[in-house]
Image 1 (cartoon, rainbow, N blue to C red):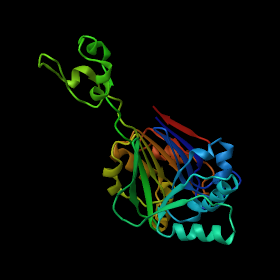
Image 2 (image 1 turned 60 degrees about the vertical axis):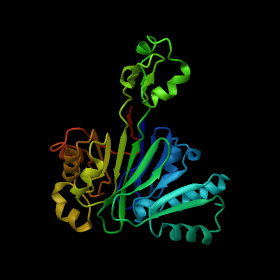
Image 3 (image 1 turned 90 degrees about the vertical axis):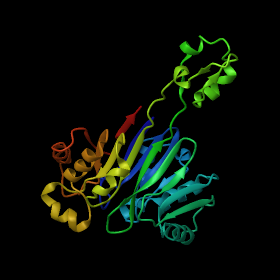
Image 4 (image 1 turned 60 degrees about the horizontal axis):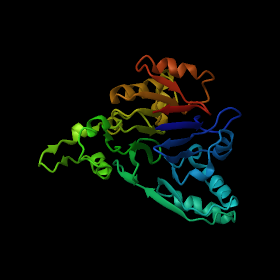
Length: 304
């Protein structure tokens, strides 16, 4: 299961009703924070995100609207007497910037912080446990930037109990091996193929987060066939010149990426404040790709 909660989705500076980028991702019982713009912890409280569930934070790049909330959040964890270590993934320099601020402010954050600084321009696996993998999506922005691809690991095969019941020799003790894909050999020497004893598991789900970036078609092989894609769309097509200059994307460009990558659903966000009506982003993107949703604070996207 994937459940994505948008905490903030606007560009540049915070405003009364516009919050910088931050997302809370639940995937296969893992809980991740993705980017941490200013005011993230306030949004976490507003939308009832469990602080204690988060042990991994992924920062795309070191522009303020994507990581200025990090020091405040870590400081709050200190006030809450957190003891469990926190893993923080982000560009080289994030450790120095974060620890220096915490030191100068004499923060209460005494728990262990493990920084995983990134510098590769190639996609790489940066996190893996028994349920999920995370790899980088190299992007092109004014500073070193990565998106992140979160993918469920394949689940065990499901037992076909109707077929299994036809073989008296198969015991419950055999079930784990069967679910792992092994055939069963009966005492007669007959081999029962695993495909007769199991059912294919559900397809592993995936979510791709593409933060600030200019139009970059070479990310398509990395995010091919993902179930859910968030792709920044700072501008409409009327300001493609400004998008190119600032190394951002337009709604149409985000939709082109989604279409070529054959994604299940596209979410667009990071809107420029020059557009009071964000529905225009959806209309423009839908001229290229049909399954488009707008990011907005508090929005929840679920895939089962």
